[in-house]
Image 1 (tube, each protein chain N blue to C red):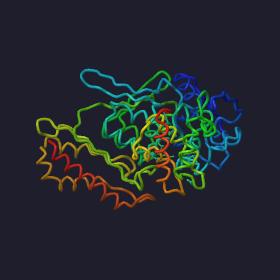
Image 2: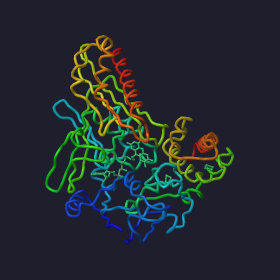
Image 3: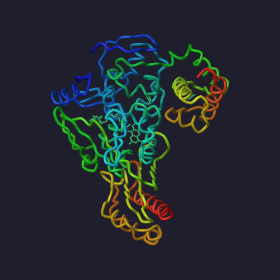
Image 4: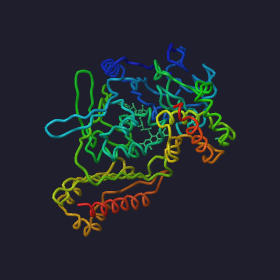
Amino acid sequence: MVDSYRPKDLKEALSIRAEHGAMPLAGGTDLMVRYQSWTGTLPLFKNSIMFIGHLKEMKYIKKEAKDKTSTLVIGGTATLTSVANHPETPVVLKEAVLSIAAPALRNNATLTGNICNASPAGDSICALYALDAVIVIEKTGSRREVPITEFITGPGRTVLAESELVTAIKVPLKASSVNNFTKVGTRKANALSKLSFTGVADYKNGRVDSIALTFGAVGPTVVRSVELEKKLKGLSGSEIETKISAILEDYSTVIVPIDDQRSSAVYRKKVALNLLEKYLRELSRHE
Amino acid sequence: MKEIKFILNGKEVSVEADPLKRLLDVLREDKRMTGVKEGCGEGECGACSVLMNGVLVNSCMIPLGAVEEAEIVTPEGIRETEKGKLIIDAFGDAGAVQCGFCTPGMMMATEALLTINKTPEEEEIREALSGNLCRCTGYDLIVKGVQIASERGKDLW
Ligand SMILES: Cc1cc2nc3c(=O)[nH]c(=O)nc-3n(C[C@H](O)[C@H](O)[C@H](O)COP(=O)(O)OP(=O)(O)OC[C@H]3O[C@@H](n4cnc5c(N)ncnc54)[C@H](O)[C@@H]3O)c2cc1C
Ligand code: FES
Ligand code: FES
């Protein structure tokens, strides 16, 4: 049996974190399953637990505008359902969230829980990488912001210290006209990804102005290559079309998946490249 | 052990238990609400569905400490209501119940769906029930049951 805490507000939650390092439990959909034991017995947590799902201060989603750029700020206890339902949520994030499990789970599970779990198959993570999300981390008396690419350091690992909590996820809202999120699983509901893909891009004056391409569940963390994306910027739709096989070849060097119980490496790579090709064809037709 | 208060089917209750005990076990053992079933115990089947503050959740993944001050509704809480009776009859008339193990969870999912969408399309019904597994009916009859409930319950939800 371990201790559990129920802070009344964020301030108390941060001091419990500092004092006891208690593990935050938001929706519990990862933790309660990971540590489950026999029916009728307590879950086998190793460390103390702190309930945070009820903390209203972090249960919000709001749009912030500053110097012509706007950002969607998603509070640390906002549920997946609320993210999916928010009118400003970028379409790829919405689709990624709706691909997670089923309504009852999404009603209680949080977006922050999905990223802190840091599973290579975490569906929102793939979209959040493409959207350049920034993670807001707080501890008593200080606050820092870390890009999601630095926040996640490996499977199940993040930069979060024992005294810290994630209090928000910031998603820059940028123009994006060609959007795609695709998840390949064994069935529609309740299936973990064998693989996921996100593509977002925008044209300006007939040339690719911004582009981000990410692949989930093909490696220890989401795969994104800013260098390869740079090569695509400035191209017209028809130039993209003529370069498709070269681009696929480039990407085949950065997508190096693993075998696991859900899928094989060969299958994952093939499907990842197929999804990329499909996206590039769509992109080339848009300009 | 801790005393935890929440609202269960409209009444304030208090339970003396470890806050990490699963809500599912609290409901079945401490409160004898056995309409809440355990199928998988890991969020995949929906047999343990209840409403928490008005939305559908899986009670097998929720520790008691997380429901302090929350409003919980179990199948026992809707069974006797006008809406609950209507869902039960609709399921009966559609032939949506075979062994019955999934039925309480299916009813909770139906209640949750009709609360936010009185006249769902078939696709929307299937999506709303996608977290509830049934080993017997092949789902079509359950979808039919929800359609009947939605038609008959137009003025209720
Ligand atoms: C049946 C089933 C199907 C699933 N399907 C999918 C799927 O398709 N795709 C997918 O990506 N995931 C899936 N999951 C995994 C899980 O539901 C998600 O990762 C979910 O978003 C976790 O959120 P939570 O609030 O329930 O997390 P919790 O279990 O409460 O916490 C998860 C982790 O995050 C930490 N944490 C939570 N909040 C904070 C915070 N504010 N600050 C610091 N740390 C924090 C916790 O300490 C813990 O380590 C599935 C799970 C189940 C049981
Ligand atoms: S017992 Fe809770 S979802 Fe199966
Ligand atoms: S009727 Fe038997 S599981 Fe659904």
